[in-house]
Length: 193
Image (cartoon, rainbow, N blue to C red; front, side, top):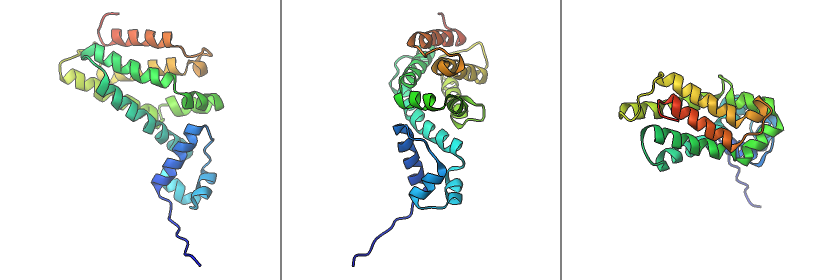
């Protein structure tokens, strides 16, 4: 007779499984996830919060490395740098198939998770964008005509209106609109169109 070793699931296991499910386009149900991990629902809720928070964490885990890569690989400085980072991030998001699938599965739910002012992803995106802008201001590379906090918020909302135009306005998201958003960001930063 062989002894069977069972390892207890951890919060990281729950997150990793949810991330894999989301990337495959599978719906995430916390009850099923807790059963699969052989843990109680209360334990899972303690670990991840609710489904919205878990999906927000999954989305942030995909966004943050993309943002860091764009910051590290975009040439230039000042307005050109900010617009280049903005373009790289949002172009990748625009063409990210798992996100398009998520939006198509349940557009209203996706919009809430992606853009709500209570959304983990939205709040963190604005905060990260604000840090980037403040860094460029501190280095003397930009001197925007708006407050950095307002500018950051407007930049994120502008990107969201392009990336999720299919849900918001019934128009398929297009690269041309993203380029227009980049021009608008350049103007908001005090640069020339």
